[in-house]
Every structure is written in C-alpha cells, then in structure tokens.
Image (tube, rainbow, N blue to C red):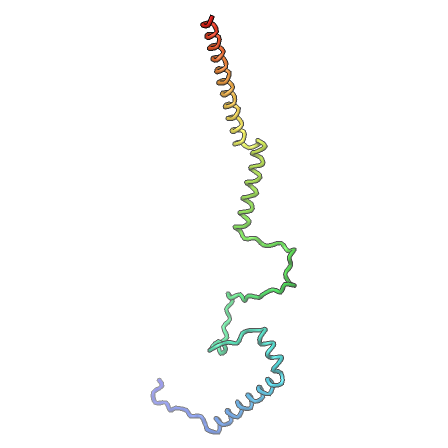
Length: 150
C-alpha cells in the first residue's frame, strides 16, 4: 500500500548541479558540431532523413521492413540473367510446348494429325467416287440422247 508515504523532493543544490552538467554537455556537443558541420551534413543526408515527432525518441526495429536501396548505373550488370517470376516461366514453357506440338502436328507425328490425315483420305476417296459416278451418269445421258436423236 502506498497510503501514508511521504513524497520525496529533490535537493535544490542537486538540481542546480544536474542543470550545469546538462549545459556543459550541450555546449561540448555544440562546439563539436561547429567544427565538423560540413562533414555531418553530408553524412546525415546520406544515412537517414530527419525524423519527425517522437520517431527520434523511440527507436523501433522492424525485422520485416526491407529498406529500398537504389543501385547505381555502374553497379547494374546488363549481362546477368534476369530472374523470371513463376507466372512468366510457366507462360514461356506453355508457349514452347505449343510450338513443339504444332511442329510435330505439321509433320504428321501426333495422334490428332494422324486422325486428321485419315479423315482427309476418306473424304478424298468419297469425292473421287462421287465424281466418277457423275461422269458415268453424264456419259449414259449423252448416250441416250444420241440414241434418241437417231
């Protein structure tokens, strides 16, 4: 229980001593900044942007956050093979498979091509038979007309 406890007050001399130490510390930092202000400006612009609000007071480390680092043109290797995504790889494989199939199909080596060729042969034979019958009927008609004219 905290009831009945007295409050503790800081000694005024101790407060003065702490304030002097803090001023001296700030003055030392200010002197260091003045002498190396140019180098500090360059390094601060490269490292991180100036933090706003309480961001500077609380440091948070997020392991899931990936910082974006830009590459210079000199560092980029143009000859390096580009990594493709899974969808791009599957699309390329699909196109290659289709091209292989079409090549085999045109050569007549696939089952579908063989079936198509067999159907074409049957249709060709039927058309030849139909043409032959028409020729025979026409010749018979001509022969009958020739007999009827005599």
